[in-house]
Amino acid sequence: MEMRRADKIAGLLEQALFSGQYQDGERLDEIKLAEQFKVSRTPIREALQVLVASGMAEQIPRRGVFVRQPGPVELMEMFETMAELEASCGRLAATRISETGLSQLVEANVKCQQAITDGDHDTYYLENEKFHQIIYRGAANSFLEKQALQLQNKLRAYRKMQLRFRGRMDQSMAEHLEIVAALQSEDADRAAHVLRSHVAVQGEKFHRLIASLKN
Image (cartoon, rainbow, N blue to C red; front, side, top):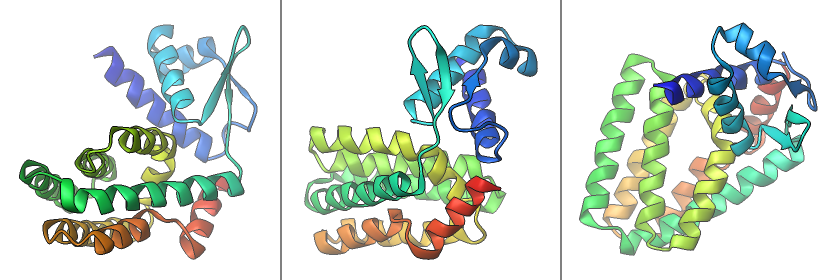
């Protein structure tokens, strides 16, 4: 129960960071946040650790937790790397994923579609995250899976924000269906291509993401 509250607070803090309520390098004060959210300091500490794990904040020993916003170049490089990791996972999973894994992908897509119907961005992202994690496991390469999970975690807040752009959830869902079709037909090149395009944030999409961080 406490951890769910911490995750909710972490989500609200992410939105506050994106909306410019905190500046890069600003200290996140546990006591003030506990008063603001009317909770004890325990869920605040846990929420701050979520931000630290995702790379949106940095913990400095004996000083506290400070806001850390990646610059445009660093963010672009992270998305570029994520796209290549996902492509590699897709390429390997095309010939290695089990029937159970394929069934799990189809099930995750059903839940994603329901979230779109409900207009629920948060649930869509959670199910979308599971969808990608099934592909990481399906690649049957534990080192690659670990790297993909780490970077997925660091980019979570930014990928979640993208889903709020008009039409992005529907586009994402259509790409999910292409990914599953490629994996089902064991088309490694197609799976890699679609996953790379699905994750890459280039051109106009990247400008919109950067603009949304400044507003």
